[in-house]
Image (cartoon, rainbow over all chains, first blue to last red; front, side, top):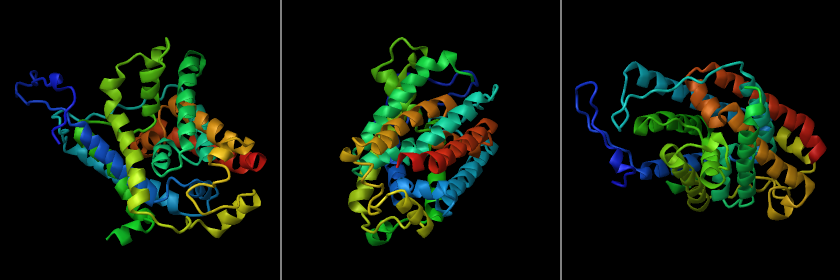
Length: 162
Length: 186
C-alpha cells in the first residue's frame, strides 16, 4: 500500500505558516478504484451495446436511473466537499476548475460527434476498457481508433471553432 | 454472497456506486473523474508528433488516470470471471423487436456478436460501428473536452453549464446515430 509515485515532490507547505507534509497517494489506490468502476460498469450492464440502444430509444429507465443517481450522489458529495473545505489525502485544497464556456461551439459540435460515436460503438471510453476486460477483445480496435480520433482532433484543433 | 453479486445490479445500486467515484478521486488526490483524458495521455506517450496539444508531462498529469483505466480492464475481467451471469441482458421487448427488425439476431452476449467480433470487424457494418464509431468517440470527446464521465457525471455534478451543453450534444448525436444512421448501416 505504500507504493508511492514521485516521492521527490514531497514539499512542505510554506505560505500559510503551518507545515503540512504533502504526500502523493500511491498508484495502487487508483488501480483499485478502477477495478471497482470496472466491476460496477459490468454488473450494471452499462457496457452493453444493447443497453445503450435501449437508452437512445427511450425504452427503459435503466440507463437514465444510473446516470441520474450517479449525478445526484456526485453533486451532493462535491457540495459537501466545497462547503466543509475538505482537503485531499495529499493535504491540498480541493479545487475544481470551471470549464470555460467561450462561444460554446466545442461543447455542441464536439458533443454531437461524441454522441454519434457513443451510439455506434455502444460504449463511451470507460465501458470500452471494461469490455476488453470482459473478453470483447475486438474493442481494442475501437480504443485504437479513438486514440487516432484524439490525434486527429489535436492536428485539426487550430482550425476548429471552439 | 457471490451468487447475489453475480445477479445484474439494478440502477439504484449501480448509479450511486458510480457517483461515489467523483468524491473518491477528489479526496484521494484532488483528481477529477474523466476517462477520455487517457486517450490524450496515450497519444502524448506514443505519437505526440509536433502537436502542441500533446506537449505536456503525461506521466505527471496522467499516470494516475492510465492506472485507473488499467483497473477498469481488470475490474471487467474479474466481474466476467468471478461474477459471471449467463442470462442474456434483460433489455425491453420493444428494443429487442426494433433491433431484430434491423437484422440483429444474437442477443446472448454483452454486444451483438455478428458485428462486434473479429469476423464482424471485416464487414461494412462492423467496420463502421467499431472503427468509425471509435474514431468519433475519441475525436468528439477531446473536441468537447470530456466524455460521459467528465461531462455527464463530474461536470453536471459541479453544475457546469458547458457540461450541460455537451450532454445535450451527446444525446442529439446518439439519437441521430440510433434512429437515422443505424437503419442505413445495419
